[in-house]
Image (cartoon, rainbow, N blue to C red; front, side, top):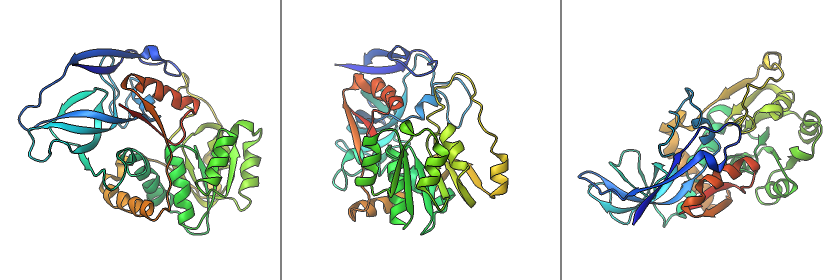
Length: 332
């Protein structure tokens, strides 16, 4: 058997294409003392990976050309020479886009398939759900009765954010990119109102109409013009949680937009960006609370499953066309 590997063949200009990815094969490695041999089972593809394809300083090291990419992965331990792991166990970690790889165990977390489906540990019980929970908890400081606005509301993080808002007794409005998605977040996830940004000519007015009492917390996954419109509708002491900016990830030039200083000052707004690793010490309690809500059927999650190792790049590219319903996962 050969070991398939996916590498970054070239740095994308604009939206990534299949030509930016390389497909190679190598021998399957052997586990040495203190190591485990892993076979990947499920691969998470996420918009933030686009930033790592740029050769620029960021909160995480950029990918290197002609070397394997990596992301959150669920893998099976097929051989173990590490006392902390047994053959047949499943683990979650940041792993390479290789069918087989070895690890010394650092950064691997065991997952229990008897408590939840393995895929859930890449979604609602993984960094996706934890991002939603901690963003709201640490920055949003969401309170009962407030109005929560969420962009990318039909996506993996946004859909969980909105449901947490409802659990906390808030009025929740979501922004998404199709009638199918706006219907889904209301009917399946319990959002009070939804805005289809693709059929809306005036986002400022659309948000004002959907949030007649103004916006207390805006959880932003997209940035750009939607962020501009949300800022114009914020209440005094409102909080803006900057989680993602997918509308800008493929820009080749730095875009210009409205100046936000006066809005921040006039309304005493808090606007803070974050990455989930800022709160790593809080992962355990966050996952525990999310699991409890799942058991109580208070949180639902949706996944788009793409099959086949070779389809990992296509699944990633499809994120930028909004082809995912909830969390995008590749089953190997």
